[in-house]
Structures are given as C-alpha cells and as structure tokens.
Image 1 (tube, helix red, strand yellow):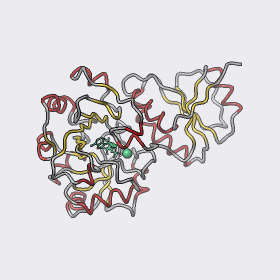
Image 2 (image 1 turned 30 degrees about the vertical axis):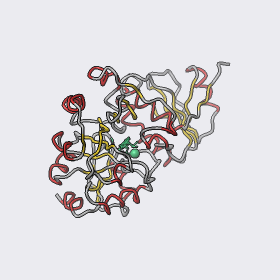
Image 3 (image 1 turned 90 degrees about the horizontal axis):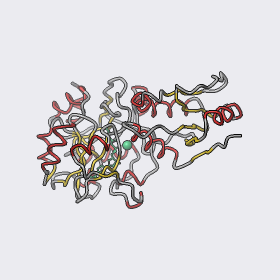
Length: 321
Ligand code: TXA
Ligand code: MG
C-alpha cells in the first residue's frame, strides 16, 4: 500500500478511523510530527494520541500499565476509547507536549488496522481538521487538506462521527477527559470509580479542553424552548439562520429555510451527522446554527459535549408567548 510507504518515509498521511479522519505521522520521526502540528496549525502544548494495531504494542510506549487498563483494552479495543497512561521515555515530547503521560488508542476501522499493522510502529494522529474546526468525517472534508499533507487514504464516511472517549488512568482518579462513543455509564461497569472531568477548563488535565473547539464559521447557538416557541422563532428568523431539530417534532416545514432534522430517537445517527451538518451549514453561507439539546444518554453525552463546545456556551432561551 502506497499509504504505508508515505508514513514509513516520514511523511504525513490522512487516514480513516471509525470516529473521525486522523492526520498521522510515525511516532519516532520528529520531523513528521512537527509537520502534523504545522498542517493543523495546532498549538504545541496540545498532545497527540498514539494509534496502535493491538494491545501488545502498548508495552512499548507506556509504563505502569495497571490490571484495570489491561481489562479496559480487552473489553473496548479495537474501538473508540483512548487511554491516558504513564509514558515511556522513547515517546517524543512532541507527542506528549511535555506531559509525563501518553494517550493510546486502537482503532477498529479495517483500513486503519491494516495500515497500522503494515507500518509496524505506533502512529500519532490528531483529527485531520485545521485546529479549532469541526473534525472531518467524510471524504469531501479531508480533500480540503490536499497540499498540506503527504497523502490521503480515503475510506468513506466515519461511522461514529465524534472523536474517541479519552480516559485518564495516569493519576489517582480515573477521569473521562472527553466523552465519546464508549460512554461513562459503560465504563462504570468495569471501573465503578470513574468520573467525568468537570473542572475548570483552564486547568484541564487534557490540554485540548482549553481551546474552543469543533466550531464552524457560523455561530452555533443552543436553542431552548417549547416546540411552539421554537416554531414561531424559525418563522421570524432571517434566511441565514438554520436549525438542527429532532425529526419527531411536529414542525411545519418552511421551504425557505434550511432545516436539518436529526432523529432524536436515533442519537447515533445524529452524532454521526453533526460535524458534517456544521460544515455544510458554513458552505451554504449560514450565519447562525441553532441546535436543540439532545438527551445526554449513550452517545448523547458526547454529542451534548460537542454541541456545547461548538457554541462556546451561547444559549438562546425562548419564552412562550
Ligand atoms: O477519535 C479520535 O481520538 C481521533 C482519531 C483520529 O483517532 N483523534 C483525535 O485526536 O481526536 P485529537 O488530537 O484531535 O484529540 C486528542 C485529545 C485532545 O483533547 C488532547 O488534549 C487529548 O486527547 N490528549 C492527548 N494526549 C493526552 C495526554 N497525554 N493527557 C491528556 N489528554 C491528552
Ligand atoms: Mg481534534
């Protein structure tokens, strides 16, 4: 596979995973790692996740791997769970951004797995978006990076559509730093003491939490109110406003507006489309994207988190007339 050669020679490669597309570089090539930060415009203090073909590779990059870490790998790998562990010295400070830890994940996407097996070394890969933008989940999204990277391996749409769960096991407390498709509830079954990190983003143990994230050009605004109030708000809003609303709502379809209906009963579908909808709204010249809140159950936990971060905390509350 040409894609393997690109990574082996120390170039950068965009490749599909089950969560979002990643921008990869071999872990032991500082120049390739620097190119990743450069192509994304990523701050150097935000560390990268190392991708491995199977759990046996973790011994090469992490130390003090606890029995509970081994158990989680057995249960959830390959899949959308990144574990933060104590790093070994051979993991470049470029990857860990100076932290004593490293995040590791084993993706389940067949192309990612084959790629990692053939490359034979861990691959550092952040999401393949310019820093701060929504992560790419479709072929058309990564094609925007042509010219900035060594190559692009296309693999269709990403199934999950939101980035992996990041679970920090490197400290005394087991902390979910970023919710994802492996939910906090699921983790609790194996790790009853696990908690969601809810502290001050400025002091966040995950540097990525400090930055505004996943945001399109348009303003994302969380919309609260009854169906009735929201209906009249839509009718009176400018044509440059669009809405992400549950499919099940009984709304008269206003043809003059772009309205994305997301099935509330199928949160997996809503999650997999979320970033694509943000990107498409930008392309359609929308100025505001109003998003109703989703139930925070299952993948809804991660979806709520991403909606919240994309909005930067902006909320519009509608009173009933
Ligand atoms: O699903 C995913 O995880 C995707 C695909 C490509 O695998 N990758 C991804 O990487 O989302 P990135 O770089 O966009 O997000 C990694 C997140 C950031 O918030 C970063 O701060 C955090 O993981 N992280 C990485 N290493 C860490 C560490 N040692 N300690 C704490 N947080 C860490
Ligand atoms: Mg990212």
